[in-house]
Length: 456
Picture (cartoon, helix red, strand yellow):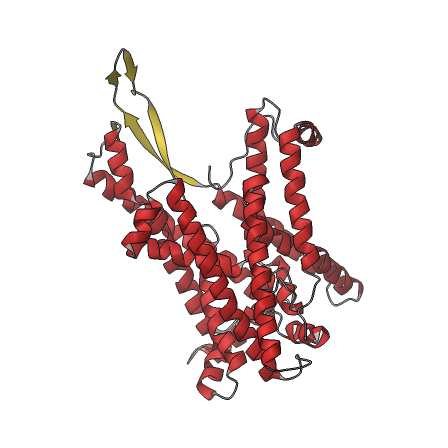
């Protein structure tokens, strides 16, 4: 490990990329301490402290704590992620975007431009909603009025645009995926505070040593489980027939088609959670509607209705996102074009159906894995409120132990979703650094093997 780090800083280009990436992440963290004008930060922080363990806590997680303090980066990178997902979905149903996606680099640049415009629009809408919600709450705004609303919209939109630019610069001139690294930095920065909270609870006898050991063992187990599944693949053997091209004989070798168990990554979790935050947002703006208040209460962390929609949304978006980024028919056509075939399967439609059947089964496994990981924060923080299940709720609540129905009241940073993002981004970034070292004939982080990222 020490030798690999020395090799990194002995390569000028790689050293510049890593230092550039760390510098821009430092700029992002500096901006996370600049508050939005006209906000009572202490009152807002107290409100979010009371809302910890809710969907608002999930949104604050991805903003790196900026939302609870309402800094200039309060919206974080979520508007850009939402805009990217919307355009990816529109690529399937809008022929113009589908044509652009097939035009190579020029088409991708146009789609990126449209993503930026849509990000600004979404940021303006979300900034307006946040400003109106804060004014209706009353105690958070120092000088309410149209000036505060416009200033908040302008500040939050500009902050999101700047974060988007930082992420693109990291991707282009640094190392790793810039957007993922920004989310990674926002999560990791809260780990020291969470560790301090755990230490305080142990020293004040709120927790016993056994509780701490169980929690640490759970964290290690979750990390190991994430690494195992993120690297898991279903390999389909592909045989290529020999072809004569000029005086050379090509093909004849056997290879494999790797299908990832978790093809969608963390995108299904993020998108399902984003949809479930809409009732929470409307509940902040419209407080006098009884129906909306009832829906908001039913969609709190730990509630049965929330779990049903959350798990259903994750499974749906796993299949939907996989169908967008992986086309079995296109894979079968390319395989046949280059003389490849799956042993025992006829080329063409039979091959596409075979690949699609395997992809359908492993996607279900990946979706259930994401659902389990996503529900770990709920189990740790609030538990499962089974008493609200019709008919069988009270008896089931009496039969289950208290830590299942009430949770452990632990900081959100130890949740499965945050660990999923941290571990996944770390694997991808280290794999990129490893590839750069190997390409320049240096020893990487592993001597007897190679690190395989999620996209390998």
